[in-house]
Length: 204
Image (cartoon, rainbow, N blue to C red; front, side, top):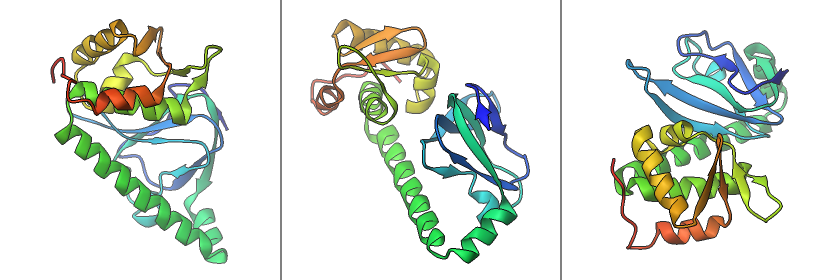
């Protein structure tokens, strides 16, 4: 099905009775706290599946999935996917590799939250987003079509701190700020600055 931005594919407590395949677009997997604060757990890119807890655990969902960039997403009933896996055993290996990569991604996220300051987290995540889902620009840069609130959720910081940090990075010429997007001219330059001992966070 063709899904527009902000489409909620499932929410926490919904029954886990299907998996999803992203043909195009971008999906975020998030958890919401009691105060509705959002924590971004994963970004699902084209060619990947999500909602695999339907196959492995069943029961209710523990997170929510929302479309970040418009695209085509296939909904696969649990029973059909399980039968396909039984008929095509190598799919189990692919699924295991996907889950292992998700664990590695979560470990990296925890490491960034505990060992890096806000500015470093923003720089590293923007570099990765620019390379993975950035829209090429005429000047050679990459447009990351995320709002500042979404960046805040991604890096685990308040929106106010994220906005102050992004404005500081823009003044230094590292990013350009636009409406619901940021322009990254050189992802490798962002990584180099993130590793520099001179980096200081605006706050937490």
